[in-house]
Length: 225
Image 1: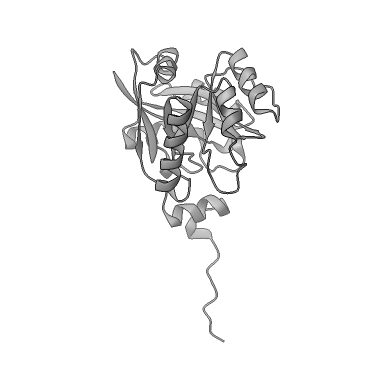
Image 2: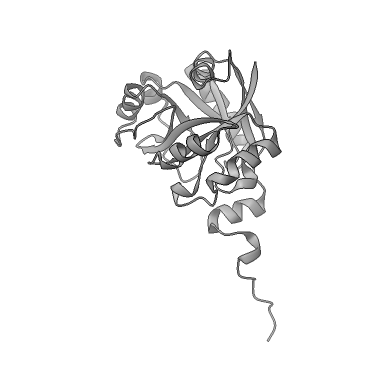
């Protein structure tokens, strides 16, 4: 079956996100998603809350972890991943917990430069090719796709949403045997995925930076008096 999964969503448990757990189900329904991965920074709290409260959609518990080679998504982990600055060690820690490791937004501005040699010798499982917050979106997607092809790894897509209207902007179509999380991630490992979507707007980028709805941001000076 073809499932639409957003593999990169943050909640208020990330501290830099405005998304409440209660918003996940209605946003999935509004965008036609079958489910999403909750990947808060360095914590499983949001994912565990979502698993308890969001029974009507597929919830993949996860985390986003910073390493020397960029950010890594740990998907389908039920315990907090031991943090390490070392990229390969982080991936091994994810695997020890039964999860899969996906390098997130590998070419995003202000993130560490990706060392392809380190990636190629690691046990990385997939590359996030589509990330709705990457800028410029199309260029970053092309570069990430080239990286995935060079490494011979599966491709995923996610919104990297920090506020609810961005959920599902980019996502992954997974050809899974069932709606079980284990089957979904096995399909990812086998490369039975297609990335879909687009990037966020300038207005949404401003909201992401300031962590406030655009309506309550201070107005610019009028230039008078």
